[in-house]
Image (cartoon, rainbow, N blue to C red):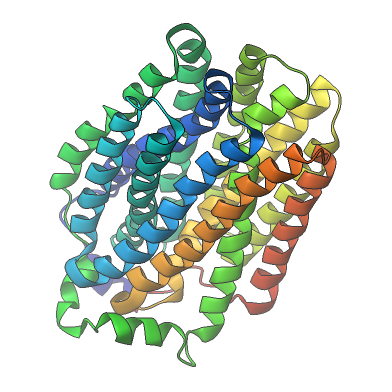
Length: 407
């Protein structure tokens, strides 16, 4: 097996910080779009007189697109390279996001949100795979979690835009503002080298059928099942809770402007969540960080759903942001390490696609149950149970991958 020094010799002529900054900037713009969607849903409900069920479909159709995109572009990344797919997905996402600002009805908005989702869903697992394959084993987990931390920056910008722009200028301007900066990220990404691991193993590429079959071979079956369960439960709970967060605050009696402001405060807790996970992941390992942060997510969700006072809502919401987004960072670091280079895009993309199926049902569940008069305490208890199932999968089926060399 190649030594750490040998691996470093293969790394591209680009610094770790430049790689992280270039990939992270696009990651931030992705988060801006997903983050602002939660605020746009609340604004559209008032603008277009949407029912809770229709509001749920906006979040779910985005996740349907992400499922399709993660599956298709993950497979494609093992065929044509990480960099090409990285650029393609960002172009797709930014154009569709800008066009969605011009829609005048729910049907057209849903179609464009599906396309946006496909770009987002394809980009995120491919980005983490590219970064994981371009960084040495001793710091790979930390760097991938730091990449994921740009997501918090995007959510913060989305919350700021929503708080200051949507009430005054409308949701269309907000969507345009999130789409335009992505064009700059496309320019930056053109100068990004492809994964050295992928480039070195071009001759070993399998067919799509061979790569899919390999995921369930004796060697990788356990990892595949574990990742599918964890991704499903994490994405199901995240999109069910966070896409509805501003609307949930309205349901709890706050007006739209106060709702946006409180969600902004909760969102600030995402950054320390990421940084804590990044600090711990190379010290105590992936399994510990992922399982502990998921348990923290489950407990916070249970408390948030039943909270009635403002201070308890804000406190539980902050802890929910802290633990949930830290878990996301650990999951993105953990997933590419389960497979060898030749099937890494397929394995990571497929797991993310299964997760996005959870993202379809999460928002729909909240919409349907809220529309039927079910209390928020019970709804959030369902998310708590789902996350705990994911914890069990990590603890029972997962193996530690801290600082191992990638195959």
